Amino acid sequence: MQQGAERGSLVHVFPQWRTETGIVHIVFTTRRGLPPVVRAFIEHLAGRFKGELADSATAN
Image (cartoon, rainbow, N blue to C red; front, side, top):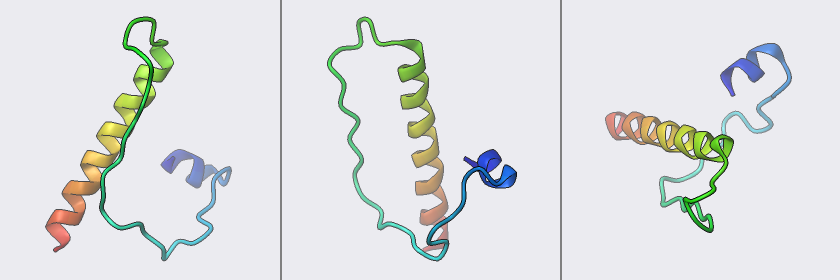
């Protein structure tokens, strides 16, 4: 997302707005036959949210 923002293809619509910390669920039918791109997306989200949680914990 950072690269998209730097290129101008993604823009912050409400840059001052942040969501509250909460639970995120990713639901999929089965791990068997899960396309590699979906697995990579899930791993990306997990890493992204983990980093955001660490950042918010140090800010409090």
